[in-house]
Image (tube, rainbow, N blue to C red; front, side, top):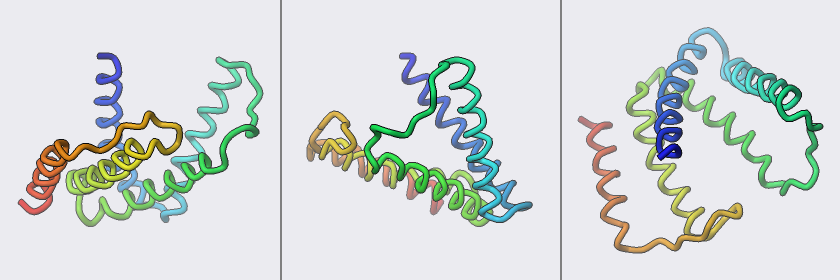
Amino acid sequence: MVYYIFLILAGIFQGFMVSLNGQLGNYYSLFGVCFFVHVIAAVLLFFYIKIKEKKPITFGGVPKYVYAVGFMGVTLVASSSWCILHIGATQLLSLSIIGQMISSALVDHYGWFNAVKKPFRFKQLPCYLLVLAGVLIVVYA
C-alpha cells in the first residue's frame, strides 16, 4: 500500500513539476530551466549523501547505459517546459502516459535494465486501448 501512496504522490508532483517548468520557461531558456532543475537536485542529493549516508560518491561499477537517465531527464524538463506553454499540463501529462506505457511494456516484456521479465499478454491489450481512449478523450474533448 505504501508503494501506491508514493506513486500517487510522484504523479501529483510530476503534474506540479511540469507546470512549474513551464513557468520557468517564461523567464529562462530551455538550458536555463534544465540547469535549475538538475543543479538543485544534484546539490540536494550531494548533501543527502554527505549527511545521511556518509559514503563517498563514486561512478564506478555502474553499467554505462544507466547514465542515459541524465539525457532523458533533460529531455523531459525541456519538452515539458516548451510543450506546457502550448498545450497545457493536462494534455502534456495525458500524452506522456502513452509513452510511459509503451516504454514500460517493452522494459517488462524484454526484462531490460535488470527489470523482472513479464512478457506482454494479449489479454492486456484491451486495458492499453482503454487508457489510450481515455487519453484521446482528454486531448481532443
